[in-house]
Image (cartoon, rainbow, N blue to C red; front, top):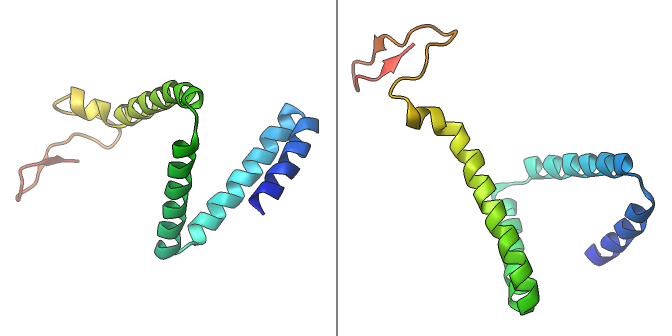
Length: 118
């Protein structure tokens, strides 16, 4: 079933413009997001296990040339992901106190842990 869908998508993608392709990808992503929001924890775990098994099998069957082509891409993707994540908490690591914001000064001291709050 998945192979048939892939064949249909290949036929469609060869005739569509970049804008049409982008629109289709956004629609597909929205549908996938909707399905995943509706799935239960057990369904999510089952999907993840199947994906892991499929990826493991694909990596076991790949040739050395395919592996050599994949590894730099994986390294780039992992570095990019680490960089994105570090930008989320970078200010907290660089500054002892975050800058004053529209919420006001952090001068309320917690009685339990002495943390500063707005």
